[in-house]
Image (cartoon, rainbow, N blue to C red):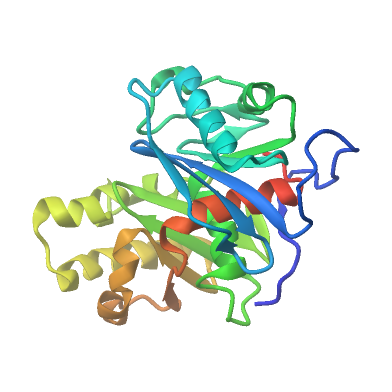
Length: 276
């Protein structure tokens, strides 16, 4: 996979004019990954996808309201003394800078103007806010599971966790806010039969679970004709055990960035001037 410029379908990639959000170095970026249990941030080397130093994590405030989480974001940014642009991920659909759905955080996030809120909280600096699985997809394609493959075409990242998150990319262009985990497969939502949580709840072996995943992937193949699946989520660390058991036709590779993917993808998004 060549290190092509990442774009977003329907977005503008033009960088804003000079402001107070210049990165301290042309190859450094900053990302924050907001989740239901933790808010994590780090400085990212955009040439390699590696963290510069350790990430910093704060437990997600409870209740996880926009105001409370914003304070956690400020604390993380100040922890690093970062003065440049900030990319952020959220567990929900983001359209035109507005959060349309909210998963594992307070329902009051729905309808929030994320770009305006975070930019204001961070002193007017430039921000990008995107769905967490979309951020992971951007990062994995450039630095992770898709980085060493000569694969343009259609790539689908799936994160197997509490549900099934998804990111769809075509020739390096992100089609944002896909929710493939909610597609019905055999009359039942995909994530209700093949998420990592379902496997844990049912006590299934990797072999039995992989048969469920194969059924879901075969359904996605029939709809999207992808060239590659990238399997993410915590269970991707066991990918060498269960990916060979899959019976669908399209190649599947394990994600490599693990819990770095959201932060790296967020830093990439704001560095590329992407809007969602």
